[in-house]
Length: 175
Image 1 (spheres, rainbow, N blue to C red):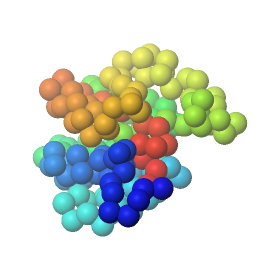
Image 2 (image 1 turned 30 degrees about the vertical axis):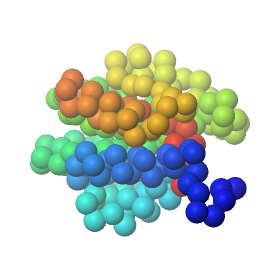
Image 3 (image 1 turned 120 degrees about the vertical axis):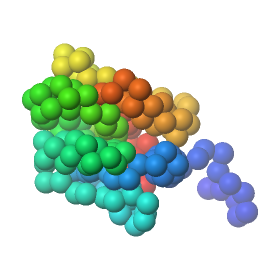
Image 4 (image 1 turned 60 degrees about the vertical axis):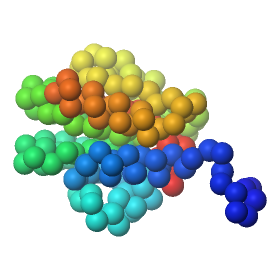
């Protein structure tokens, strides 16, 4: 516990993500709900600078994200890694083919830090599948501030004109 009047030495990572998106001028966030993402999506929805669009599944989210980007809005997607895996065809034939610079903030379920048995299989295949479809990605480093990592991922997507997935731990996104 932090003493009254003192700040925690560790910044709140989900707040850093939201503040970074605002500072970088993201106008819309497309999301498919996940238990880890729930509260950060509520906070985005309360943020007047960013329009939150909730999608029913990940390929729908991808199509909406490409459309909003085509309309000129800087776009971030919030999905779980299982959803990222399910949008492979749309990713290859739409987002990558037409070089949409999308920032994807992905809750990385099934890692050793998330040993829930039904998430483990998707955790094992996430990175090999991303490599297989040629999707640019990085694993967030929990030992470094998350804001600059989000900014680098967004910059990469813009400069390389491609989707970029930043794989995030529970502490990165769960409010």
